[in-house]
Length: 408
Ligand code: GLY
Image (cartoon, rainbow, N blue to C red; front, side, top):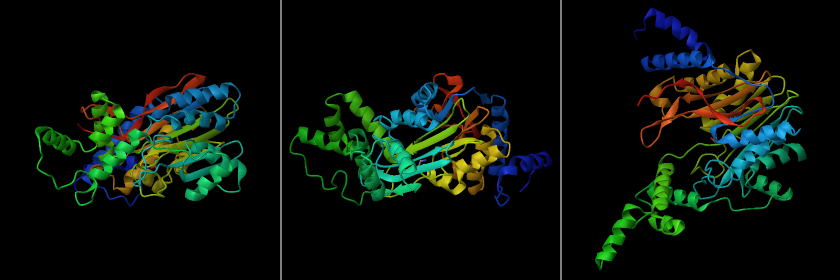
């Protein structure tokens, strides 16, 4: 492999935070170069805020606004972030968190959540919890009412029931249609989807009906649900197709700093759509999807949980901040750990989506992602963003720093 001298020197600097064992390919050189550019460019626009401050993933504009309101009213930082994410957990339109989250492979919604309370240096979490729209509250109850940190699956459900959380249906009709669409497109060999045995239609109407059902197998369900609104039905089917083939790895992380410089955080999710029942992502794992050190700062993650578990992401971000990195540099350095596991090969990383969010005690905050964005169906680049409510104000979106740029 030929590498010119200046590039070699540059690589040495850029790769300082990357594992020494990473195999360096020509494509990885390009990747590291982009990473360093992004880090330099973004640090020019570092964000700082007076407390109270709340930071979240991009689905949390309302959540950070609420969290800051709670802190303004004298509320505790953990109560503030939980009140914020409850808005998203209860929103049936967010298909990656709480009620309306996309289900597991059996059509059952299973939720993961964790909380960390900086002032008391404690944490609580639940994983694979069924039937509770607000797992963040159950995670807090684990912290407050038990000697444990993480309770999972059936045990989590029994714990939630004991604490008075009702057992509710979390599957919305939209999520059900997406799940059935996934099932019927899984394989031609299973029995879901239109039968391969097609009778000769007895009339033109029968012919049209068979053609329609074969073209859009979930048509009947979607048509019934949208009650004759054809535009809505077609939108729903297009969305169901998209998530069936490319399941989202949403989630919400929210971290906050108050005027006393206390810090807390929460991460809550329905996890990976169509997962094997019992799969646990990074969100409920302390040090992976969430970490708080009241002396330093807080960090959380969204995206492909398996990567964040491998890298112990949130803990690494806080650890980097403890050693003096800015929140943004700390997030980028933790993302480099993820990229290094793939030898910094952009082809291998193309479907790997990981985002970190961080704030420190000085009120500096950031969001960073592996990629600068993703392409929408219309070919437009949707830039990676995060939400923050700085200086005790309302929430708005900020552009994330990133390691790599997608080319159209
Ligand atoms: N980051 C959410 C999950 O992978 O479950």
